[in-house]
Image (cartoon, rainbow, N blue to C red; front, side):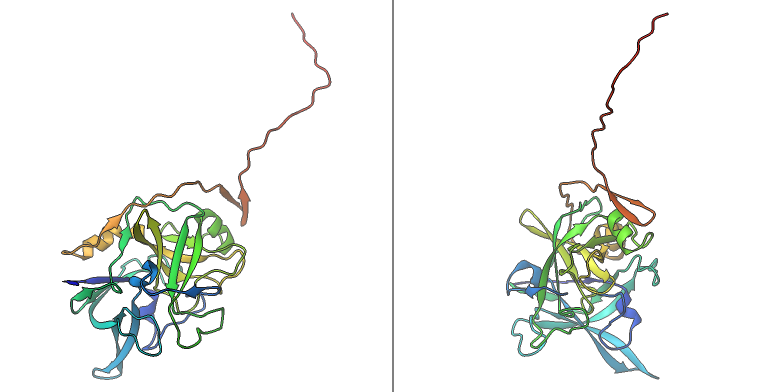
Amino acid sequence: MWSIYFQYSLFYVSVWHHSCQQQNSGRSRYPCRKLALAGKPPRIWQPRLWWVPRQQGVGDVCSPLIILGRQNQQGSNPNEVSTTVDEIVLHPAYDGSTHDNDIALLRLSSPVNFTDYIFPICLAASDSVFHKGTESWVTGWGNANEGDPLPPPQTLQEVEVPVVGNTQCDCLNGVGSITDNMLCAGALEGGKDSCQGDSGGPMVVKHNSVWVQSGVVSWGYGCARPNLPGVYTRVSSYQSWINSQISTDQPGFVEFTSSGVDHTLCRRGYCLHETLLSLVFPVSSFYLSYQ
């Protein structure tokens, strides 16, 4: 076991705009999922954010409490530890109407001991590329299905979802809704997605033997609906901003590049898939003329 001052934690911004209770909004975001097995990489870096109300002058003030190493929301969790937050750093360009720049940093108040159950994850570097079909994993304690809360003991869940190209995702979710700071993923046939209560959780990919956080659960229409992939904050867009906020013990960034291309065009709100066509025109006769 070793200790490090785990100074900052990555979360999405929208959570700060709610009362001292777990957030839930119409588009904020897990159906057809399975249990995240103890010790398996996708659960190691999953924190739990609680809002602890405290009296300060007039009214309640929300004080976030970070819980690390938790697997079940109910019952005992022998591997969990908790810490408080000294500072919340919101992205200055966050747009609440479009969810662009939906990201924040939390500065923890005390060091965190890394264990087999609590360990940091590398972040996607600015030049990372996530082509359509890139397999990704999302973890969380959100709804089991749209409108259906996760049943007791509320064990951490995971789901594997493929990346959907930004152009296609923009067509499906509404032209102009997806920015370069967003990343989409989900099964287009439906049935696999993040859901309400998962907001702020990680989406990760595997680079050789290294797990890399590619996204942060941000928003979506419903949960696991056909042709409506979930939308995530693209972590690679924020390498410069994150480093500018952290003077020491900066996080590790890994460049991730997947194979493939995104052959989707958008015309008047419809998705068109590029196809190579061989056009042959029949010729019944021709005439050559020499002058």
